[in-house]
Length: 113
Length: 111
Image (cartoon, rainbow over all chains, first blue to last red; front, side, top):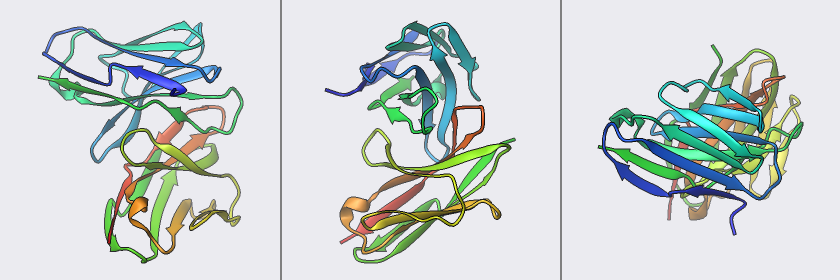
């Protein structure tokens, strides 16, 4: 079983719909992150959390919100999806005061029509 | 603004060739530079570099960091088709505890 699990893996939706992407981890890591990947742009940070009570904006947080329901769960919401949010979304974890290395989920491909 | 730039963006070579991928960065309070390999979906960790001039090596892959000139290279010798992937460079800042990624280099190895 994957250590970092994302659901759904693929989703097609329409403009204006609310979408939630979920991430759960069994690695016991405190830090969790949401990134999006677009062709030619690499990975860009949306939100990150260092523990249950800590939520921080990344470089492209507009149009997104997150919830850290537990140490193991970190969900990303698009309140009103728009076509330019079509992308591959990755959840990642890292250890507290560790190497900086991230452990990624398999990704959630979101298409907004 | 923090910036990580990779070059080339795309590279196609024949099996057995040696390739060098580049990563330059402009960040304040540099802590470390990391390389990842992304095949189908999730990126997987290759190397973390913190000190200049010390080569990290894993099989046919090696990487080195130059903190004076603000760049790193990733070398792959005797390439194989299984090396085909997107290679991502990322920089971690002191205190920020998050990574800034470059655009990635798409490497294609033809048999």
